Image (cartoon, rainbow, N blue to C red):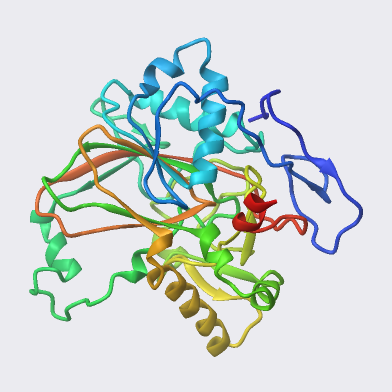
Length: 365
């Protein structure tokens, strides 16, 4: 998908020891952070927490998607989502699956999504529509606690071994892909009266919490990502047969190496990417060294409440997040059905721009 003319394109730099991929261009080119145009000034934006999360009470996204001002508004929404990490749009009752896909595509097309990237396809979970056809780009998230979900999670006390920590649920979408996710949309259809919240945590703030020497050390490392306990032989005969939103996302390996510290091309801010239950190890380190870093990253998220928010769902709420800016984690504490539609975009190949800075530094300068 080619970027919009509203964008400021990448600029060339001298030779670097850290070559990166950008938008189908040659190596040693980097993105210029995008700036808001003011197109959202007529809408009320409420911060959920000081460093992440915004809520737009008065936006009708379907009307915007089919209006003459669509591109300028969606472009600024994409930038805002990347800056704030996650945005909540309550009561989007008129939004169809086609609208959800259009929004997911425009969020990328109007920013820096490479033309080779489109909507993600999950390796195993596609949605069967009422007419029997398969929608590969739509994932239906539906969990019914009456089907032993609560027991499996250990909340009811009936599990053989009671699980006392669910910190391993934190992740970013599709980090096991060579070209992982940028924006994810979750449009909730059915919600329990209470429970089933989604937690988000700022990867920008995780980076800003690091000491400078430690951050510099991590910036020279890469990490391997893979679904927990994954074996290609277990899925090869039942997985999606083609590419999964990018020509580079293909095959049954579901294994990729990415920088521990990445740069978000939309904001130009550094963030910790090596985190979550898809992360297998830090490349090149001994197991004990890798485990120490992974445990420290987990503690950064779980020990610092200022970088977390909790989204409480109502039917027809839409939540959009930038997987480069936040981690997320579901809460399996509900006793009634919860279901929604998820659409996920494929972004750029992960990279670290040596000129980029943390969020706090960028906002002060």
